[in-house]
Image (tube, rainbow, N blue to C red; front, side, top):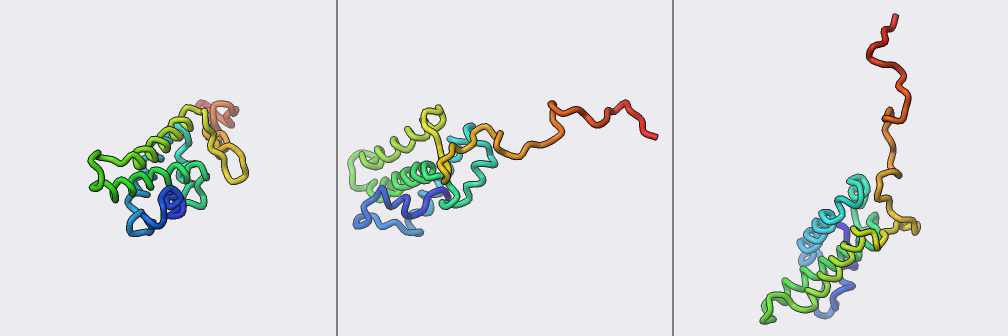
Length: 146
């Protein structure tokens, strides 16, 4: 999961909805799945898989995931108290998170790592595999060795 309980709690009043493992795990898993799905074409699978827990996940991604998880948790708790299907606050949280994801995808918002550097979206910062089309082959199939 990308978000910690603190990331989720930051969007919810602790006196109304105290976030704990029992009430936040499903929402956090669902939020993480949505974020991964949205960012699949932006970051390489190796980059996304390196975000193994909240501590290794960039702050922006943690914030978006925490906001989505809070939206899901808030909606599930207050779903019976409103005539509308989703509360306005739950919808606001969801819409804000999805807007940020859209901005990341479009390139108008940059995800930075803990050092302040942009997270690699091209895969060029990853290990390269050789030989590739730019290297001169050491031998060809038509060569014979004695």
